[in-house]
Image 1: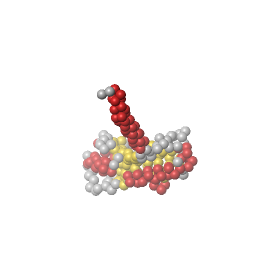
Image 2 (image 1 turned 45 degrees about the vertical axis):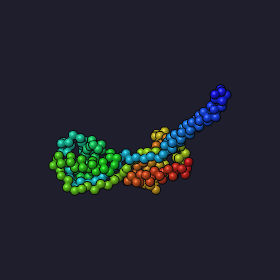
Image 3 (image 1 turned 90 degrees about the horizontal axis):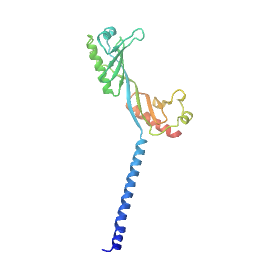
Image 4 (image 1 turned 60 degrees about the horizontal axis):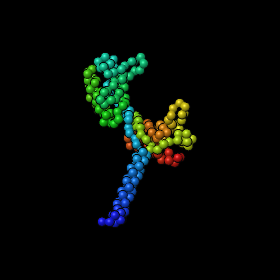
Length: 218
């Protein structure tokens, strides 16, 4: 085959294939970049602490409890409640002599119930047997996440109602979202902390309402 003919074949077939491959690679790179952008702008929220209260409906001898159990703290001169620390799940309980209990640190209601059962078993070691099934009431849920976008806190402080912002003292902006009965702590990178809700469903609804309000003033 003549050299000139070979060049024609290369020009006709090899170059278009190469161009097609490059075009395909560029498209893939673009898709990856778009995917990263989408991922960066996704909203996220996760429960990090559930605060609950309950009553064991039984008097608790706190002095006997702290003398028997090593994982307790009790200073009645400073505070009337006893602190019981549970390793698994990692939670803490504030126990009062009346049988009232406040439990914090759990990230799910399953862990809350597990913690309450651990408290009841601990009481059995000092001869206290709880016969009832305690009624658990959620007092507060703390959640952290992101709204998926950077925030101009100075601008938000002027445009939103019910805000507190003192950047010289603390880098976050406090925003009370009364419609959702929630309070948000907002940071410039889009990170948020939500408190005040009493269910995971309320957490997600509050975040959605927050994002709507932020977009209205952005």
